[in-house]
Image (cartoon, rainbow, N blue to C red):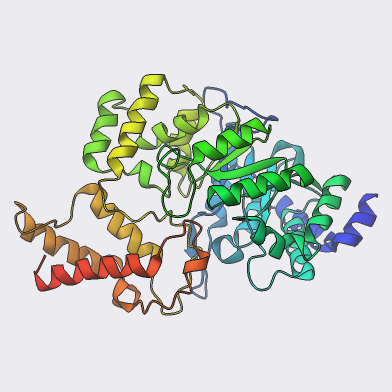
Length: 439
């Protein structure tokens, strides 16, 4: 099939050319590479990958939240200059804006200088063949390309979910044909779920021959996964046995491993006083040879610079350091944090609650130790007042936990399988005790 025939089939020709023309006017800034070389394990893919779910946002002239394209360009320029070549997005990221912003920035560079990874996020509404194919074609349009390097079936928990979204409607046959034609170079899936569901997907691998798999992996989820998620160690072993490369999501567990409770942070700082807490988490991920790339949702350029510092001078963990992180993981179970990764899949809440905002505020205060624990606490009254004042300052009253009516709409959306209404109620009860001074 020649390019003209393909673009006719995909329905993307005019839009793709239009995007490319616009991108040619958006000039690249000169960015110098820092010292060091980006390591690779699989197929020339950078061991540090760019997760495009958390691009910086700003307000447009009408007051709407939009991606800050100038900052995106700045960070992509710095990333590519230092060997980061894998960019992962999805149609549902950032209210549907991520693919277009990422594509606009990447199109300023030669197509063979980076790898595009995106997803078929046909979770809602009903995943029909027509809507699914249109979503795939839209991705081609946003990236202004005739092929996607790494294409994922987004967040598949078991065979039943696979069948309803890809198997029974003929979508998987369409994608397999696109892979055969070279329009999809590698076809894989991302996973959240139980061991049973994962093994069902491994059985499907015998039929469809998945090229890679994206899993949640970090030094907590390695052997201490919570909720309905299974341990990353189990998934990694099964994938490695089958020769399936691993892409890592949530290497920082939604930022929790970059902001550890103070006593645990002090333990790591004693060993590496000049390295960030995040560097430990990324060294953990990069120490496994079947990891193709570890995705980092770098919102700010300082995040990118810190990660480059880790990867451009990459040092795999020693056995002693692995043991240290295992001790940290065990100790984390003592802290009553919520296992939220701030992915925002639960949003918008029909009752206006900022669900991830509530969880992130609560987790940060718990991790920092700046919360009232009991009246026997030495600085109880000061911590009580500060917590309540900070809560009201951070979150508008209409966005706070007490507005949850447990409608349950968020439950099926959460890839961590959190009992979100229960967790919101727990936090609200704690805050109410602080207000009534009855803790």
